[in-house]
Amino acid sequence: MTRRDPDGPPSSRRAFLTGAGKLTALGLIGAAARSVPALALELPFANGHRELATNFPGKGPMILLRTRPPLLETPFEVFDQGVFTPNDRFYVRWHLANIPTIIDPAEFTLKVRGHVKTPLSINLDALVRDFEPVEIAAVNQCSGNSRGFFEPRVAGGEWANGAMGNALWKGVRLKDVLDRAGVKAGAREVRFNGLDTGIVPGTPDFVKSLGVDHARDGEVMIAYAMNGQPLPLLNGFPLRLVVPGWYATYWIKMLDDIEVLETPDDNFWMKKAYLIPDTPFANISPGQTGVASVPINRMVPRSFITNLKAEDAVKSGRSIPVRGIAFGGDAGVGKVLLSSDGGAAWQEAKLGKDHGTYSFRQWETSIRIPAVGPRVLMVKAVNTAGIAQPERANWNGSGFMRNVVESVPVRAV
Image 1 (cartoon, helix red, strand yellow):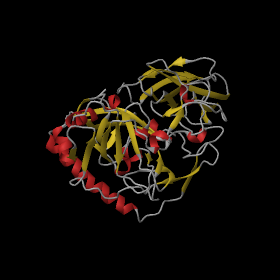
Image 2 (cartoon, one colour):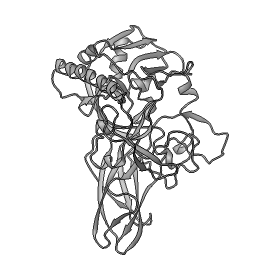
Image 3 (tube, helix red, strand yellow):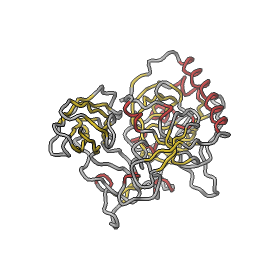
Image 4 (cartoon, one colour):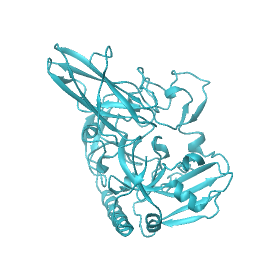
């Protein structure tokens, strides 16, 4: 749910946003001349060799998948440090390589056009001054998060589990902006575009669309801040779309253009890319054909153990604390269940503070392993709609929507 912004008067919010934009742009320019350090690590799947990059503007140590366009993964230990992912460790995923390195907040405008009564050109000052500010806690997760674990393997960015993050987003309701423009009768979809562009001529512009009713549901947001700070440039400064409960492909960064359409959007990124099998959990068998496809949309529940990693040694015969994070996808977290015997029996974990339907939720419990030897800890979330993580991992040829009851093998000593 959204709530009113409790911060100070509009003038202080405008100064906060404008000042940060100049610092962000300068930071990106400075980074261009520095090389990526070669601090190596291994992710737990085939071809999992990665470097830990420390020289991207506004970012701490991040797992490097690609430099241009930048793909940076959050190291998994960050998720054990709190329910909100710090801005400087929040993952980064761009589709097109030409990303502006200088954005003057005083000159930036957001256009609203198409099937509307009054086309708008809104600068940042007016966006903050003239619209009610709201906040929402929501998980932003790449459609291909955890793709590296798919078996058989599939093409694409081979992420581990860190292409996700949770933030407290601040901005204005998309509904309020659309209402100011006056959506005409017969509108079907709303299309969103950002400032990034392709290098090769003819590269399809990265644009995404939502149905008009979804766009006007009061939860979809135009955000200008996350976790109490302006958006980092690499995460979409000065504006990005926030679509709670939906995969991040719709969360357009550097948002500068909103177009209301009278007809269904047939652009490349809606009709040919980011399609999933129209099956539960987007699951098919390798080689299966003849399955209808739909654009990827709602997220599904996931949960993880964060304080233990594979092959950690734990004390037998003692109480062992186990904790982690969960989210319900497009619904809240109903419960989190943990097994310490490979799934034979399950115990319900204690849930932490509820920050809202779309947020990470921390959980904790304790287990006792009576004897020395290997054990497999398993965790699964059930959301408030009754949907649980599947026991067997889903599969599709695009490596989207990875989901399964997560397992962590440990050694009792």
